Length: 393
Image 1 (tube, rainbow, N blue to C red):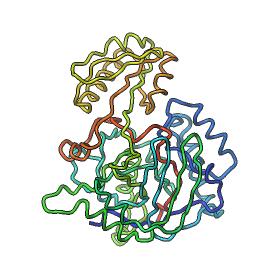
Image 2 (image 1 turned 90 degrees about the vertical axis):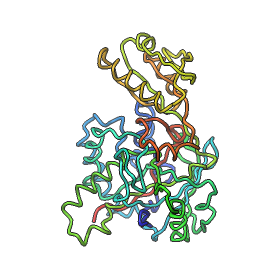
Image 3 (image 1 turned 135 degrees about the vertical axis):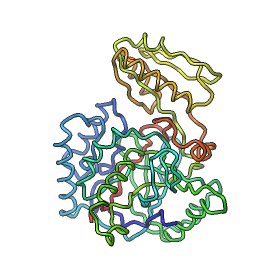
């Protein structure tokens, strides 16, 4: 297998790391106050915030924001904001209220990734990809000289073979994250070649499905990287294709059995003129349980025990209701955040979590789950942007 690339990573040289690192762009999409505070914290300072496009602003003059992002990337590269790390992986230890989660920053070959349902590639999406969400993201990425990852990949390593074999090198960063993100430490991995072979051993064996990584977070970002690579590849000479930097996407890989990795449901927030009417329209059969929140009040309802199937049904009901009555849907990671948002005049559906022990078998047998079925932790536990990698040749 050649799925894993040992990357040359860029890190900020002299930046205040607590200002530099910011949360994933697809978080807090209904919380303008969150992103306004991030903007205030990072104003006039080197920060990944100036290199990303928070999705809450996707409809606010995107062309101007994209131009500013690309210009800032070029400025940071020319003015020496970044330093290059020798080819190698980075061990990331992220401490939150859930404990300390360990991951490995590496690059994957986009030729070995697919977001098509039923694909048998070594790297696969885990949720249905909404194709109309990709073009705006392509516009953001297509002229960018670098990428900053928030994609997190899951690997299936119950015996912890990969992490047990890691040899630690230099500590590259160690600091407190802003916006209640906890602490993070990054250590250079001195034996990346051996660690890569340990990853490959997980998918080895006669008759085994060759699923190496399942995308846990950032599926649409990875799908965008894949689309940009396929578009670029058409214009490249044959000899440039194997090692072009855009062919490889930077990600963090996390063991699904990590004790601090919690599978959290992604709840549905329905913004409609009559939240009570929407709530009353929802009926389900089944012995499982979900909850509905209206105007800040919560009550339990029946839900299918097959959670992915229940979510498919729920999303169909939401879509039908909005088509008939108007409104829009958003996807909220935190229980408290959703209940708070419904108090402003909206309805929410609080969903149960899926079981991570059955996760890989479910993906192998059934392919993609419904969009926004699960989240790895709460919103403030998501991957923060820290590392970068060149994607221009």
